[in-house]
Amino acid sequence: MKTEVSAKITIQKESRPFNLTIDWDGLTEDDMRALAQRSIVIAWQNKHRVANEGSGQWPDADPEIKATDYRLGVRTQLVRDPVKMIEAGELSADQLKALADIIRKKMQQG
Image (tube, rainbow, N blue to C red; front, side, top):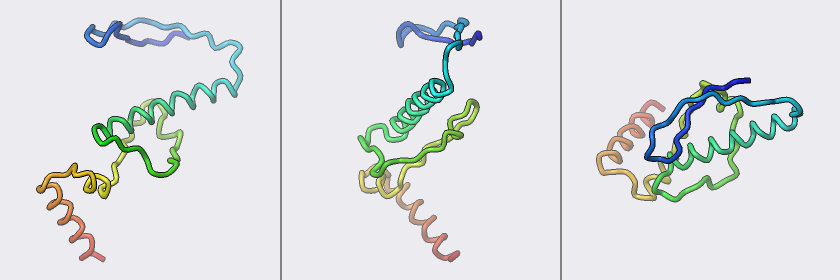
């Protein structure tokens, strides 16, 4: 099966498209699941690094994720815990005020 991919030799170089042929013969369903799991783990780690860049924080508990969130063509965004962001001093005064306004409105709505 041919797959169109692009790759960079180094970060500074431009990516070059090419066709990568993958021979799937001999792979069991368990092998496929292990490959998918590895791919999902790498994607989750990258998403978490990007969302928490500079904070040095990882999840407090053992996270659970849905494999369907990592299907091709599905884009999900990791939402950071606002309490952790406040505790880490990552929000500006304007952002804190906006957050307080949102909380006040939600509390008034019941």
